[in-house]
Length: 133
Length: 497
Image 1 (cartoon, each protein chain N blue to C red):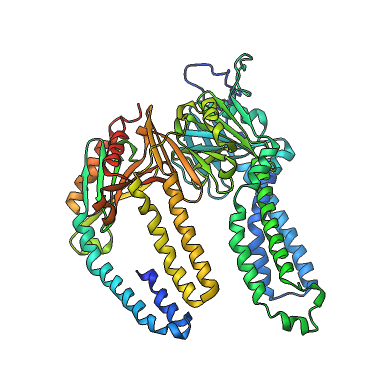
Image 2 (image 1 turned 90 degrees about the vertical axis):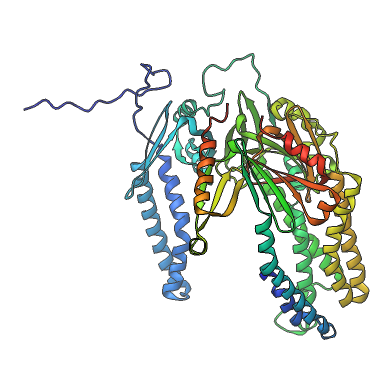
């Protein structure tokens, strides 16, 4: 949403005078989007997040409006990180699990630290199983 | 006086000289002296910008005389320093290679040691730059699976014999350089014809980039105060274009130049392009000024991508690329397997060189009929917003332009619908889609890095879903708006065995 900020701003500057009436509506639309983004989307994201670590694959479902289900075969996981930012450690003591494949990074965000450690250990243990042949 | 035991000098151990079961540690060796020149030139190239900047910062804008004297001094110093440091680098660079791996020690002040075990070596690439060609040597890039952009071990200059030995030991050797080539066995190989190189350049689509650039230029030219320029005495009026026709001519000339640059680029990159299937490796040789030779283990090839560019598809032409997993370098890790081919010849080409991923590429199942409007409508709506704005601003001309843009967006959506399709057969998955170029991907079904199912609120209600696969090079390929059951079945059937 922040990237859309210039749209009403520039519109106010660039549009010819006879279209000036439209500019307040653009600002209104931008504010509405901002409220949605801050007030509604995180709640939806949090409520819809699902993950499952199975013996042969990791299954993640995420998204506020567009919902994406991602399946990563366990044998494709190259390494696993646990990340904890300053906000994560001060509010609620949570951590993010990030695992990498050749195709990029996937994450399971904001798990309780103890659960994060458990998930990480489980993934590590499962990826250690002999792969490739 | 105690006996001083002279240091043992190990015999040079070629591949045949391996005495025991344990391969004896090979003796450390230096690079060919051409490495001095190569290093020095590299240093010079890096130094040029800071030196030039330094001159200007310290002395402001120097007079021509100052610049000449100071400049020649700077050049002399830079030359001496770079040659000296090149020599030092060469003198302190040692490598040691045997069947267990390769070790490289380099660095004058800070010593840097790299040890790459043979089983982690993914490819040994040969690069022949101008310097290497001048001295009749080669540069070797030893790539490992994990690495970043650069090759883990770079040997700047090796004689051909030394290079052949490294490649033989690390598995990058071609049939021509090791053992006795079997005269009966013919290695499948394709070499591009000169005509096709030119054709590849001509249809490369760099013109596509030039069109908006040319349009912008035209806009600028159009807005120049021509009348005032003509009246002023400073500009010779004879150089000014006099009519719209002349402007169009200029634009055409710019386009032509950009197009020619594209052709030249293709000639430099693809001249003498040869791909060879040698056992479990693909060897790719290419390049006009710099001969590059890359070898890709077939086991690492996870997908083939057949790209039909906008300018190529009408002529039934396509480019074939391979996606390799975790290959160092080459931004997309996608390599050109062949620059230009008739699309209908692609199955035969794959049959010959990469039968593991051979497919007839046709007979794909498309998304259901009811998905068509979901392909057409979103781009149409996105295009409609600016189109309406433009139409409102410039009523007569803008209206036509707006309609044209909206129609083009809709047509693009319909084309995407027509291109989309999938097939699952013989353990392979085939996906086809279009952004601008129509792209067909063939991959081993059980070797995908990630699979995704995506739905937005609208498609969820309609019972449709987009199936996405991720391949090694961080590229994703998708077929949008399939029946949910179809997408689910694809997800299940692409499970690793």
